[in-house]
Length: 144
Length: 257
Image: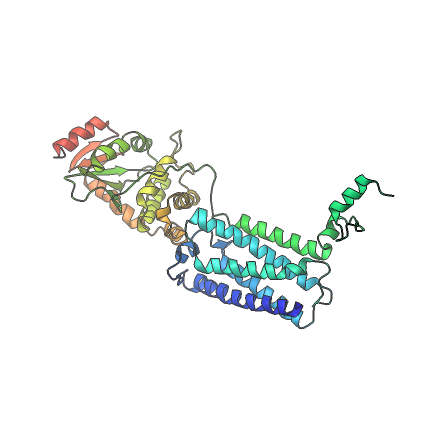
């Protein structure tokens, strides 16, 4: 049961890496020319003043977070979490991702007035990771 | 042993299906949240999130920018109004010029309502920056806004933030503020959602519209404009922020009603 949860987190983090990786590639090499589909205005979001933090595209931060979550999940599956630290860091990271995604979604809706479907997808993925990680926040959870 | 009151309180904390009170510990708050092993990572991540949000504020967003969005339904570039209108009012202005600011606040709205909204006249704004470096940079930034399709909203925010004491070149149109004005417009006007902040910043920084502004200045000089604001009403020069009646007469003489 526990290993299934870690597997699910790994899969979600891998999908998150793909989404954030695509957005990072567009932000870094193609000036935010994101293929957005019929939903939203990704270009407006990607090119707004909020799309970078100290010059670093937000998408790259997302990619780093998903990569860290994926690495933590793989490490846990390999039995490297005897101290239980990896699961708590994974939970904390997912919590941070959800909070920052909530902030970015607020900015999209009420400041930039445009929604990026890819960003919403990422927000859903990290929320799913947090929900899946919730048992890891309990001190009694088994270690993996 | 336990009083009914105590029993009731224990029951609130947790009872088994038979109603017996369960033994209750009173862990400190760190234990309650899973011990230091959980609290420290969560605290570290929360600090990181707050820092990221703090850093994510748009660059150079100074305090105290006022902006009241105005309606510009028939604007195309620097020209506003029905292209078939019989009268063309060309306005030469400098964003730092106090008389231009006064005209913007006191006469332009009435002129727009009486002659532009009714299809009698068009208004064309021409940059005529003659009051120093910030005038030139503001004019160039307004041309950058024009490139992105929100010239008139940017024109509005520039005039709405003219220093009340009429001082010039004191930072009201610094490069940082010029960028912040664009973001203010973007935040307030949904139709400017396609605003590309990076492109605007690059346009302002590289002074990509410098030549265009100098061409507008030369256009004014060629039309014998020497001060701001000045106007050409179908070619007839009006110098100064004149009253609405002066413009009414000029527009009527030019064939507008």
